[in-house]
Length: 280
Image 1: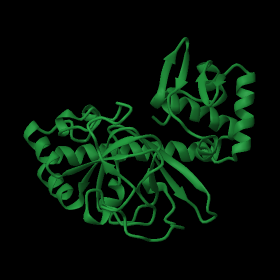
Image 2: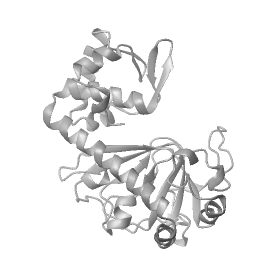
Image 3: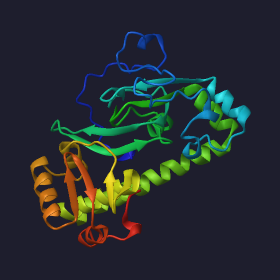
């Protein structure tokens, strides 16, 4: 969905911190990934074959030998919550592969407002659109939680695609799904009102991050109300009001900042949705 972001950067056009490069040695953006974090959740894959997201990665098909070759050309970094992978308006230097965690892609418009256009999870890639078009990043990538991300430099990635058509095919598949998701979002924004868009957002978040919990679906993702509001193009106050109405209607429950989906059919009816209309 990076291709649907506005080509506007309100940030200083400083050079991107390239993971593992000397220019990044004094940066606070990323740290070398430990085998385990202090919480014991972040695992540093020794090679691509050991990546926990291998099955959904673009590198799921190559032979072990080729995967090890990719491993020789990657840099594995841990990004703490709130740290930035790349910044809107900066040139691309390589491809980012998410091993674990969640990364938001956001765009800052001319009015200075941030809009979240995509949330990437383990197995997803970032920066591919800019990498292959030669355009600067049209959004900023920020860790929503502690995340392990592999960086593969541009030159090696280009040579790998030429050598291994299956990887090129997998990237095209990823871009095709991104485009399909973007088209559905554009249709939703132009055809639906705020409560309908909110119902659609909640159902999409369930598909990607929903966890069954005592007959309900818990959304296992930490988004602020401002971030959720930006995803459906409304103000945070409006979002909070409709979440309260959804709760009164028995569609959802809220415990603290955690949202539980209670009545999926009710949300589907409210959003005029079928499974084919959902983004994920």
